[in-house]
Length: 111
Length: 113
Image: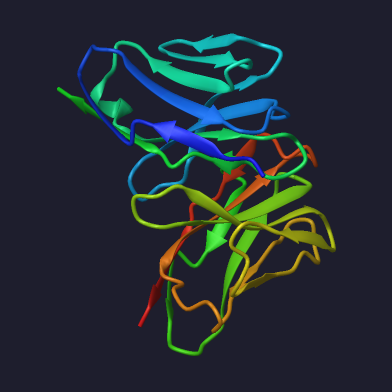
């Protein structure tokens, strides 16, 4: 089955800096890649997603890039703010089964 | 995701006891899922259902059971066979069988007495 690896497990940046989180997946049939943000004790919330026919997608300060050849995708957050502090999860899906999640990255933005 | 509810928010289980976690959605979504989240870890799939009266095992189904008698409801039973049930349980749903964009409920935290 699909395996998704996520790095780093923790990331600390200064407010205003950029943050990058990377994920690799194993199943070349995967065609949908969402990113979720989870604040402490809360439910995961979808923040951005990308499909395999697109190489990059942006939404204000958040962007996701996909490299199908290398089977990896990344989340980029620019101009980080303290409210960006949370755990971020990547996921992948072939459309035949439920999402497979990465292990999460705890992002801390230092004011 | 506001259309997915889970109850209770906290649940305590005694040794040898079965407990049932509720998940309801009013989004008219076909597919529903149950995940387990342990402290500092990712989400692991327990069971999922693509349509009423049908469900499949996920990666960690042992010690759990589900039913899908109604489109809106997908309850999870944690049986006494699950020896380490303490975790945060998240229910999710997606619009169709392609099981793509998933929306999560607020979660149930299960603790063992």
